[in-house]
Length: 372
Image 1 (cartoon, rainbow, N blue to C red):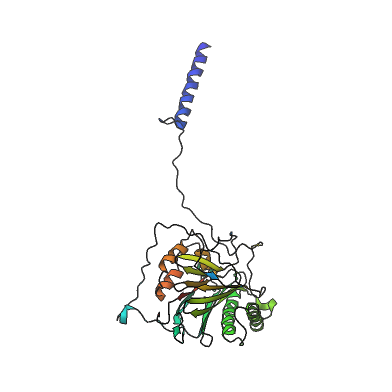
Image 2 (cartoon, rainbow, N blue to C red):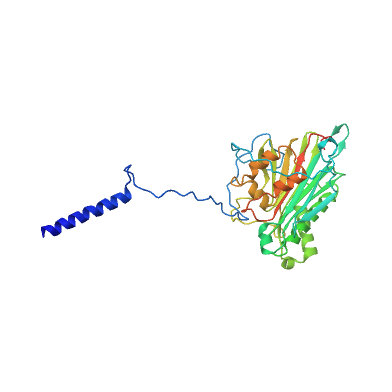
């Protein structure tokens, strides 16, 4: 009996030593499996993110005009390393005079959609008024079919456009984003952009763009229903943001009308400021034409050196996402106006999570008419 108890005691001691060896290493600390760092993956963005309202803007970037809303600016974050300049260059057979390619004049009106391919336009516009020349505007626009539509074999549904009104000395921009759940949203978006530009430059005398937002969007919607079919047969919808830019000697006066999550932003002195957005709605729903025709309206004055950007949420969502780094990168790359090929490269950035159609129209506000 004593021999049996001795055997059991020795066996228990051996088991204790084995388990202690598993949990204790020579340092006396519990042993843990080595940590494996998994790649950080951001969730794929949705069309209707619920985000808190951005903080108040920094003085001097965008000034609110009477009757306008408050421009809300993102918090400036310290950046230790700026992105490298993308390696894009032209095939030059004969270098242009002065080393810079000549910028064409912007067409009087242009509207393009993403459809089955990307579309792009660029040019300058502006006038000289008396002894004081107005600031010249340099325009870049790009819309590209997103990877999601390409994978599904479907058309892109974004549209962009610009129009210069010589009589009013004003530039009009429009960006529309078709709602992907409806198959005819692409034609609806392109029609909305075309109508917005046409109605803006041909509106009757005495009707100011600033006060005519509901009238403008109501007329666009009526045209959609009349041209593409009744409301029940339309089978399409889109968000829409439209801007008027009136160049002045000291910058430009800007008015923005918008319905839905296509947005307007301003860049000044390395700081991005949202001019129009509809994030954080209580029901997290995206407004769009033809169901909603009452736009939000804001007025601003932008200083020379500012950049005004209108974009669909496939672009502006990434612009306001610190995870993508797009806002920080473009604040650096767009500190001076890029060539048109650089702009195409910047807007068609590579990021697997931002796979929706992507559209942006940007305007660099110059110092004067000689700033071509």
